[in-house]
Length: 393
Ligand SMILES: Cc1cc2nc3c(=O)[nH]c(=O)nc-3n(C[C@H](O)[C@H](O)[C@H](O)COP(=O)(O)OP(=O)(O)OC[C@H]3O[C@@H](n4cnc5c(N)ncnc54)[C@H](O)[C@@H]3O)c2cc1C
Image (cartoon, rainbow, N blue to C red):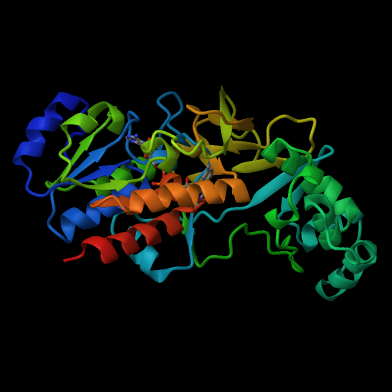
């Protein structure tokens, strides 16, 4: 991409000299992968418009200038996938380190392993159960809740793991995450609550996982580093759309309802707020992510980013940087993090998606455009699919 451009007045002259350019709106993992394929595989000129001051969307990370620690600006991002195709693709732009993700949770002042495993159950109940004894042990506390069809999330969760584990690990976290009492949430939000019958405390089971050794910022730089890709930062599509010809092909990874001026109403989201703090200590919490299960603690997680890079000198620098994550209500204009995938929003989304699909040359994608929660590997897979179906020569 060379040096990203922030002067959007250069866009109109550039459009005049580009031959059949594709405009990619959004430089998150979805937009960046489509842009890379278009330029490197199809030989197309690509113009990437990014409204933020950096590329990479929510997966972005950068080095904190005061501590030298790589920080994930929008919450912890761990790359993990089962897909050999996605792993082979991303490996061309980044080598992953050996980090394997573990999550701990604090409940009533004690620390447990998450997701719920034999480690969690034995520590919580003061038992020494064997793997083969877990089902019978849980059945004792779930049987009485199994008879009736669960009417809400709480009833469903209790029928799966029993009242004690539900109250300790699920209730408070879920209430904070969705801003609602779990009794008011539909049972369909959870189909199962994974309980591991062993002491495996890895958070992900995927064969490929880790953090890019050089950080996500570098990964995105490399994805977009092609003479045919021109990236404009601090450039919102809506501020420059007048100079884009009607005939241009557009890959849209922004919000679907925003594109159509919310004509059918707003799609709803949950948002997040992050609070950052630096400390002059080597290690503040001893792990990358600590969940907080209790409802009276307002944050859901604390991230301590240095643990993602034990291979870097900053790991032993005597300084650390942490970030508290608070779930937040969303209103138009706020950062949209999690779609609220209920019947009303799905129906509304379909209306927007149908109309955008009928616009010649427009392609909808990415987690905002698809109104989906996708991990990065899924977003890469979807981006490769879009490229192969719509653009590959
Ligand atoms: C808190 C949190 C933690 C996560 N952790 C993980 C994890 O550990 N592992 C994992 O695999 N995934 C994780 N994810 C998911 C990951 O963030 C997504 O898979 C990824 O962001 C999807 O990329 P995207 O390109 O679809 O969207 P985004 O990253 O959101 O990129 C969209 C881009 O479009 C830009 N844009 C939008 N509208 C406009 C406009 N009008 N004009 C110009 N630019 C515009 C935005 O500024 C943004 O940069 C997490 C998500 C969250 C919310």
